[in-house]
Structure formats: structure tokens, C-alpha cells
Length: 521
Image (cartoon, rainbow, N blue to C red; front, side, top):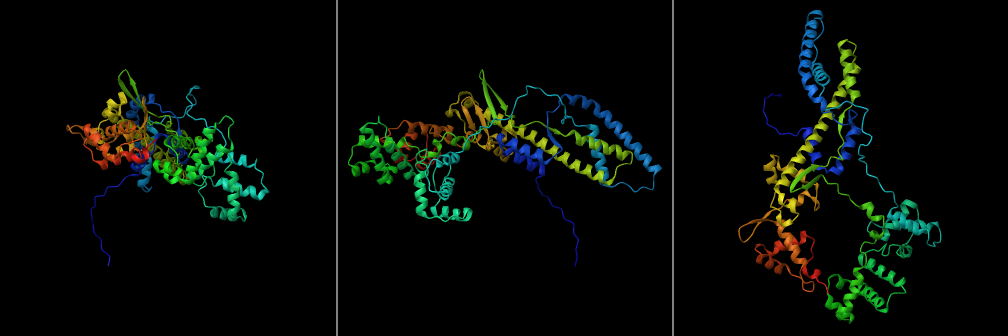
């Protein structure tokens, strides 16, 4: 049995434009350029070009006259259609909507979208970044493979497979069985673990030393053996002894060495503290990531930070600017506007057919999408500037002096209350964004911190406590580093009421190891 009922619901849904704006707010300036390029490729009605603000005033003065003329013209056309051709069926709502759109877009001609012009400055700033062309780290190893005396093409292919399995740090972390399977399926080569280890031993002699190691212990041992094999004539017997002692520590007592059980090492090796210190210094000279020793390896993996904001101190006054280098100016394609004009003329002269109407509806969709995207980019810039300006004013003393102790406790709600934006919006702006200051490029999220109350009742930022904690640890005696309990007592003496567990949490956030691992000879 069918039933009909009437219900009323209140729903809150995000429009596609709001979703688009939220996504644009999240991405940093470095990624914005790629996002704009994707939109330019997807929407033919959108193109790069500067906007013409000078047309705005003229457009405003003519808008009223155009609207009046268009309304009278439409009224006269309607009256003629009513009396001259009464037999025609009334136009559908879709046609009314399209007519209104054509009138609004063509006649009002929003001045925010400039028509394409041919003139531009020849000395316009080039926004492209030159890319250095260089060999990769694996290509560098392949070059050295050509200088090794191998039996046949088969061994060369196996060695190339091993080189290809070496990761970006220079380690071979793949199991030999997995490499054998890869050779079987990809190149139809049957190999064995013995053959893999034999060819790996040859690759481990390549430059830089330590390459192809399967763990840190083997990596350090390979580098020390390389030093012994390439013994310099100027190396003294004492230096040679220190290297041999360091190699013995790595080979036989790596666990004690990594845990800094120095007294155990002295007892097992039968050496004094000075000899142990000299041997450890030889180990500290080694590279735990051998691939970084290659001149071109670091450039491939380096992530360049593009600041989203710049703060400059001019005679005590802070000036904030938004980085817009990666956001090219956008406008509506003139060709699409001409197509709308042509359709309107043909429709008025009754020469427009169904296919042309469908094309115009498609154009309308693309132009609307382009307008939404341009507006979203503008709103993104305005929201980012507004949020960063509030952060700058809130942390004014820090941006003037660069002293972390002047940072005030600040949470997302504080900035949301100042700007009138939602907390989630402020969070999206602060996410993955950087500001360039006179004291370096800083992450926006680093300026947000909880408050901590001192013994005098004053509220200070947890960032201030972390800075003081870092200073205390850097000034400690490395032979007897402070424990977390001792650090807690020192902070309490300075007026910071803090628990030992909180000290441990802050220390871990600062990537500072425990006291035992900070110990030095």
C-alpha cells in the first residue's frame, strides 16, 4: 500500500565551492601552482592572465544604463512575442535561466575577469625555477659496475639488480631470496644466495665507502676496513691503532657501544679511557648514511621550503606580505565569451539550433566552474593573510626579537576569536605553511602552544619551557648528564612547576635522548 507524507528536515551540507576552498586552504604555496595547472588543463574556460582593475570603475558607471536598456528590450520582445505569435508554446524554465545568464554575463561583464591582451612587459619576472640535470646515485653505481671484472653478461645483470635494490640511504635492506625471485620473474635468471653475496662483496667496495651494507654495524665496519685498505703513508701507527681498535669495537662489541656502556668496553678490551675515546672518535667520523656522501644524492631528495608568508622588520614596524609567486593570475577565456555573444545574436534572430544551445549550456557550466575557482583562490589568499596577520600581532615581540622566550601561549581558538573564522579554518591555514622571518623560516604550527603556570602564577608558553630545557641540556657536563628527575628539579628551581613525566615528554619532542645515551667520555 502506497503512502504519501510531507516532512520537513534541517540539513547542513557543504557546497562544492566550500569543499574546494577547504582543500585549497590546506595545500601550501609550493603545491598551489600544480593545483592551478591541473584546473587550467581540466577547464578550457580558464586561462592565465592579469586582471584589469582599471575597468571596474567604468564598468560600474555603465552597468545601470545597460540593465535598464536590457530590461526595456526584454519587455518589448516579450510584448511582441505575446501579441504577434500567440501560438508558440511558452519557453521552459531552462530557457529563462539561460537568458538571464547571458544577460548577466555578457552585458554586465564582471570586471574581475580581464579580456586577453597581447601587450606585456618584456622584463616581466620569470617565475620558473631552473632544474639542475645530474646523474642519480644509482647511475653513479652503475658507472662503477662497468669497471669491475665480471665473467659475463649474466653476472652484470645480477649485479645491476642488486644495485637497483639499494635504498636512498645506501643500504641493501632486501633479503637475498627476494632478489633471487626478482631475477627469476623479471629476467629469467636463476641465481643463488652464494652468488648474490659474492657480487654484493664487490659492490661494497664501490664509492662511497659503506655502500651496500645490510645494517648500521656492517656499514661502519665497511668504512673502517676501507680506511685500513687505503692506508695513507702519512697515517701514524697511533692513528692506525685507533682505527683497528674502532673496527674491533664495531665487530665484537657493537651492542655495548650503541648503548654507551663504556666501562664494559674498557674492561673487555683492556684499554684505558683515553684509548677508548680516541677509538670512538674514529667511529664518529664515519657516515651512517653512505649514500649522502655522493654529491648528487642529496639534491634529489631535498625538499625545498617555499615560504607562504614573509615578515620584514622595518624600523621596528613589522610588515607582512603573502607569497603569490606560485599563484598566477587567472581570467575567463575570451573565446568562450564570444561564443555566448554569438548564441545570443542567433537566438534573437531565431537562427540558434539545438546543438548550439547544448554547447552554450556546456560553456555556462565551464565558466561557472572557472568563476568558482577564481573566487576560491581569492578567498584563500584573503583568509591566509587575515590569519597570519593575527598570528603576527599576537606574537609581535617574537617576530621583532626572535627570542623564543617571548612566545606567548597561543591555541587555535585564540586566533579564531580574533579573526572571526572557525577553528577548523585556522587549523587548515596553519597546516603545512611556513613564514620567512629575519631569524629563519618557521613552521606556523610551531607558534601554537599550550600554557604553563609558573610558581608566581604567571602563564608562559610550553615553547619557552622547551627552550630552557634545551639550554640546560646543552650546558650539562657530558660525562655526567642530567637525568629527567634532575632536569625537573632544575626547572622547579627556576619557577617552572613541571612533573618528571612532562620533562620526559618535552625531551622526546625535542629529539633529545635519555641521559645514558647523552654520556660522553
